[in-house]
Length: 283
Image (tube, rainbow, N blue to C red; front, side):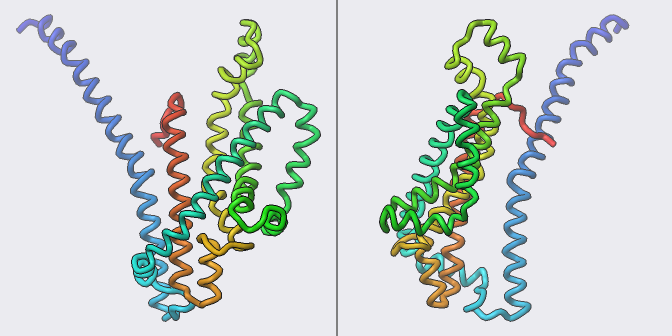
């Protein structure tokens, strides 16, 4: 075989070797992402449960103070129907507050970005209103709206509102000046600039706030149920506390945490579906 034919064979095999190398690098990066996004969180949860179990056993903690993970799991199974019946209204209130609060935040942020005078006037008012503790606002809303689901949804909406408002305003305003100038040179209207430039730029900021709101809306609904409710996870927590039923108390807390985690996961999935132009973190 001549040297020319050898070089030709090497050149023909080079692209295949390059493809194999790229595939191996992609597979290694995928394994790292899987390890960081799934395995490590699972290990953290397992470690926390193991630490909980070890503290209860080592210090001989009485069940009415802190039950063991096994007792909580048993309570979750034996009282699953009661827990699910109380979880449904809390989930409804949290979901309603999440949608209402975030929708209002996006609409008001849009108004603020297009009218700086209104932003200068009302943004400090919103900040002061947000500074009022939610446990202080909840009784007022219950007195005004009654003891139904309306005040709980409103409380959950208020909890979600401020983080989404702040992040959305920042995302809508932090547009690349060169891109903004290009849109103006092309005689784009404010509507076109908003939907084709500002909104796309604000989506990562908005989803950062929505992740916070996904868990905070459940907290708002539970706090609202503490003030006045006969059903819901919050009402069950109060009843279990007064009855010294720590196993049911912890089971209700686990249910509310699972609900927050579910909302958070839905937001993450929606973010991955909508925002596809950002590179994945492969570190």
